Structure formats: C-alpha cells, structure tokens
Image (cartoon, rainbow, N blue to C red; front, side, top):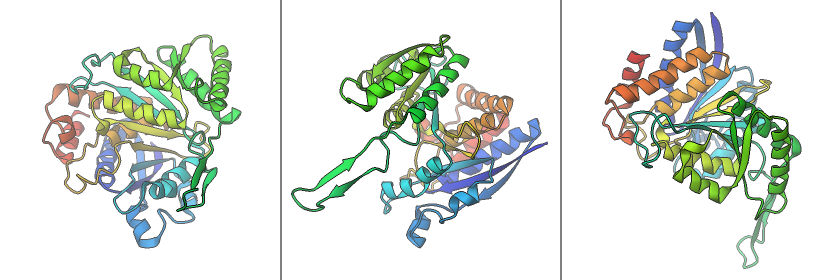
Length: 351
C-alpha cells in the first residue's frame, strides 16, 4: 500500500465543513486503489489571527514541509481584512514552496445549468494556467504621505524570464496532452513593458512546441470570448492577475463557483503542493451545513493525480459527473435543498 501524509488547513467559514467530505472521498477511493492517507490538521485561520495576531506560526512552513500535499478549505472572515488573511497564510505557502503553477480546470457537467445558453455539457472543458508567485502580485511598492492630499501608492509588477518561461512551458506541455490548443492572455497594447515581454516568451515557447497551435488575446477581448464562446478554449495561460480574473469568470460560466477546484503546484516536487476549492469561506452560510463540498472533492482529485494516482483521480471525477447527471441531489448553490452531508453520502454511494 502507498501511504501519503496530508496536511489539512480547514481555515475559516465553510472551509471546516467541506474538508471532511474530501477526506471521506479520499479514504473511500484509497481503499479501492491501495492508497492510505494520514492527516495532520492545523488550526491556521482568521480566528487564530484574532486570538494570537498571526494566521500561522513563524515555523508554519517548516511544519508543512514534510507533508506530501496540503489540502486547504477556505480563508477569510469578517473582521480580518482580506489582505491580512491572504498575505498571512496562502501567499507565504505558495511562494515559500515555489508553487508557481495555479491550475484551474473548467468543465460544464451534465445536470448543471450554465448561465450561458451556449455552454453545454461535453463542449466546455478547458484549463486556466495561472502564474502564481510573481507578476502583478509582487510585494514591491509602498505608500507615501498617508492621509494627505499628496498621498500616493506605488505597486510594481515583477515578470522574470525564468518565472514566465516555466509557467508558459508548463501550459504548452499540458496543451500537448489535451487537444493541442493554447491561448495566451495579454494586454501588450496598453501595458508597455511587462506584457510585450510576456508575449515574446510565449512566442519562444511556442516555437519549441510545434505540436501545439497557439494564439494570444488581449485580456478584455478574452473575457468577452469566455462568455460568448467558451467552447473554443483548451488551455489558457495568463499572468497572476489575468489568470486570477479569468479563472473565476470561467467558474461562473461552468454554473457554480461552488464546484470549482484549484491546484497550487510545485511541478519539481521539491516542496508539497497545495489544493483548495475556490469558493471562499462564504460566511453567510457558514455553520448551516449546506455548503457544496464538490470544490473540495474535485481539488482532492487533483491532488490524487499530482501524487501519481490518475486512475483514482478519474474515479472521483467520474463520480462527480455521475451524481450531477443521474441524481437530483443538489446543494443550494445548484438549485437544490440537500445538506453537505446528504450530498456527500450520495457521492460516496456512487463512488
């Protein structure tokens, strides 16, 4: 039997409600495939911040370092500014563990109605690859003359040849394994330095991958095409900011952000990768037992694939597709009245 050490960070709000279903799914599919999991849970959260003044302890990364993967629920809660929760937990993990790929698969499942009439099951199935550790989300900058009429804020974007090339190359290799099409998000008609640099490196990688057809779209036009014709896309690669915006838009196209997963990957495996649903902590429904667990469960499937168990991962995504296509059990975000536990039980039966 293969055994994996999984670090759990339930976090805030519905994060603590959706991780247990993901664990149940992992344990169930693991028994079938001879995979064992041991879990260590960490109470790193906004509640901890309010209690101790930090989202996680100073040696947090050292505590996580020996894990094979990290499964995170959600972070953020009223009373703690978002930039505090994000920069106090998620970003230090992503950057400290060089998780430079953020992977966001997008799929319209049978049984889930997209808000777009043209987004039908079987035709919308693409992946957004987001650069995850530099770009527009750098720490370089500052504010001057606070509270005065002359107050200013400066934020520097950082694009390195190594950082852009590795994420673009990853996206091209992913496209080669899928349908062989890649779209690069840019804005080189308005951002004069970083985006032309990005475009040049995409062209260099494209020349090294003649088996993949590729094009580039300005981010504003690309956002419109996500809505007007989402079926045209296979792999979309973008900078930290552009990938962030596009992946949330794409999740809405798929019918519910409640089912959307993500992976923060360290492809070289020098450090653990982190997997998390993208729905956030949803404080308006936290504690009511009605959160959709599919985002966390699909994230767990991405984790299985990363850990070298693609068949087990397919079992999980097949079960997700089946419960949506062949049952009427739905949580509230999908138009139903099922609790988190009821939905999870139905999925486990199918699994």
